[in-house]
Length: 90
Image 1 (cartoon, rainbow, N blue to C red):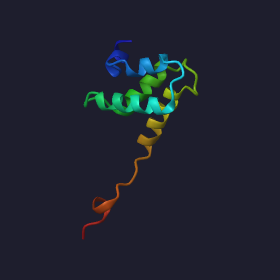
Image 2 (tube, rainbow, N blue to C red):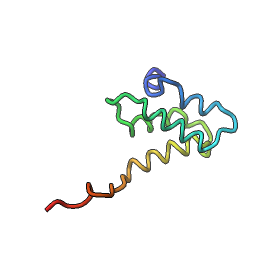
Image 3 (spheres, helix red, strand yellow):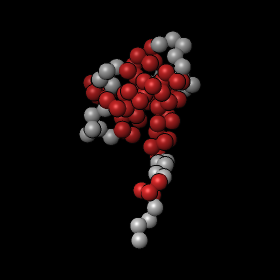
Image 4 (cartoon, one colour):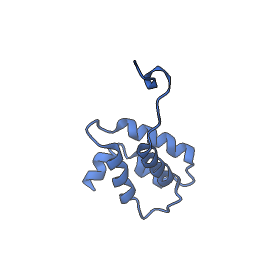
């Protein structure tokens, strides 16, 4: 439980699971706030995994669970940056 307190020190994820009728859009907003508040030294992917494990008893279709799972998927498949940074420099 203490590890979870460090991962969710503002208790944003905890509250998202407690709000009845919360929407996916609201969960995405909460997730962004949570992700931006994580300490730099923490591995985001590991943090999301641990939070999902902690809330594994919640319904799999809960909007916060879905958003957390999407966060893991997007980290696994990084997108290519566009523009001049993606072009080769000869």
